[in-house]
Length: 108
Image (cartoon, rainbow, N blue to C red; front, top):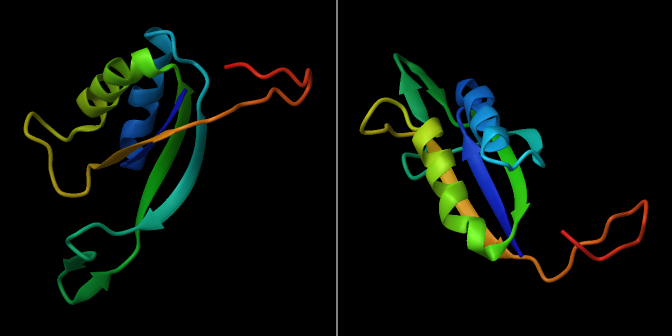
């Protein structure tokens, strides 16, 4: 199993979630985050924004689904055809075990 952590623009979340669900990946955890990337924030006029609002999606998947998930998120979270600074990041980490609380079962 793998955990996909996708940090994306808030205005892209609805589209990404819809496409993930349509592709058979309905189980997602979503929450608000703030941060900055390599550009160290954004300056608009005389105002410097150090913390940029984003949304983080957490998705636990089977190893074989990794490429499909990355393609879906990348395609739908990208700004325009080429993308832009601040579109986000996708991190993938291994998940050793997962348990369903209600049943106590160890399964995905």
